[in-house]
Length: 452
Image (tube, rainbow, N blue to C red):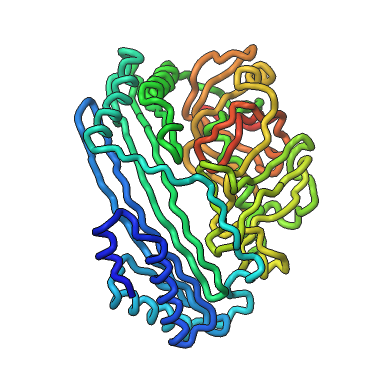
């Protein structure tokens, strides 16, 4: 077996053929020990993170991570093991450990590799790899510029949690006994800043960040800092809010959490355990008729893109909700078999979940709402996936006449997700493209808002 520790001294990432040799050798070892199905995956990551706080370098971290995971099946009895030590002896011990575990587990009729005819065969180049050859000195300068821009916004910004530059590049390789063998490189970069403002005895914190596969697509350091500072200052002068039932807008950068709850409810693990408030809703309306929710896993350079899922199943664009009606669940192979269905290529989750936007920006949505609450921050987690009951701490702004009047905090927004989804009035065109969920701000007709 190739010695990957020697390989890594020659290059940040070994040649793909060397990783192929490693996973093939692991699979062969497991088969020699009696496994009838095997899958193996290798990952290698390298990166840099720098944080500057109050003009001084607070942290500077280089990371170099690697890992190998192996899953074996002995007549539908499953065993898994992993290691970060790539020495030949350690890898052999990992194979033996996975096989030993499988011999002591119970047989599961639904266990096994993904169906061979579902595996990816044409691995598209999604343009995910754009390494950023930034030095530590350059990263410190950039982080300093980000924080300085935030602190210059207003004299009331008296403290800081720092400006941060992060960059990471990685390589993946996966193979199984059904002939699947594929790998690809990817990169991820971000700039972020968080500062603290003070007005009298009141202190408020806010932040801003930007992320991209390609550093050329990052927002400038000055812009990230400016937005972080402005977001912090606008939260000063909070007022209390009495309990009331009003329209609510979720700002685009937090609206994705709503659709995260939806995906959890239509995911296979929740469904076969009967732990979902959307059980047996396939083919039924779950959102208003104007809404479309789809995933786009093959978008070039997007954060959530991948040519295959974590089982090697080919990913593809598909509608999950069309005209408000639930078109399909989110399934890996195991959950699909439990439900008597086919995998949807979602082992590891959805990719680039996209909520089709309307034609209004946030200001226009505020005008449509007229009077109500704009939520810009969510706190804590009070969501029951079985009943759909929803209650979360929040902060944001009170709106009257379509205009922001004053900031509010220490409030709770509550409802039932099933009702909240059906009461969505509009989705804004201010789509946040920085993460795996791509949505604009969301206006909900009515929710309970509990204040002090």
